[in-house]
Image 1 (tube, rainbow, N blue to C red):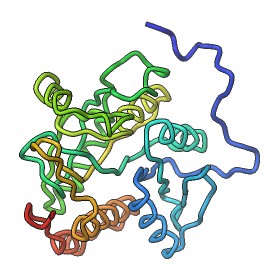
Image 2: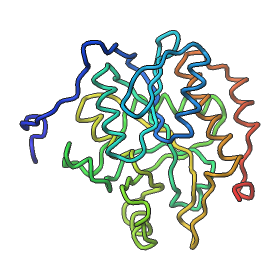
Image 3: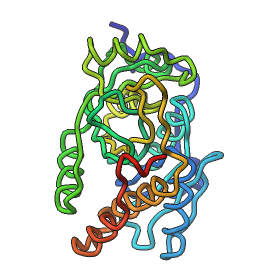
Image 4: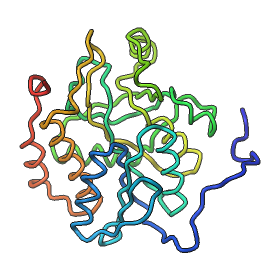
Length: 265
């Protein structure tokens, strides 16, 4: 195994002289829709914007946590994660979407990714481990938040790819059958790998945006019902990070956005 940490790399992530440190805890929204909604919400509540490449970053008014994003794809997500860590991030929740490989997982369902399966090309520059794990402590925190709000969730292995337009039925069937993969995304495995490499905690909470287990691809991410559900989940996590989680209000907000299988169309 290569000793990645002792390699003679040319550039290292760092904090510039005038850049302020950020809180240790934060939410990382990889999708533009969720990131835009979350950052706007935080700004309206007094949060302060910061610079983060061609992405976005906002520190909460009480400076208890931050939110960042978007960053689609493993290379961009890792670039942003490295900067966030350099600025002081130590505990991060990835918030994103995933494609389901299981009949039991339908559009709008919540997935808590477990072990990652590396199918993207960024991870191998940090580690030779093909199956990095999320933070056990942060996974427990996410389970508690979802259970407190009576939100059903499923846990399982998630495969990440750089090439969503090159997913074949045979490949996905093999991942499901041979590696017990329940869903696919584009960033999770790389972010888990980098978090382990840098010694920080990271876990993820994902919403199923499309179904890949059927004969025909079934997308649900463009429907108004899905977008409302996605915003509801983002707002719930923001409230939880802000230590102002009101069980009754949050539960009613989530239940008021009901997605059934028929509503995905």
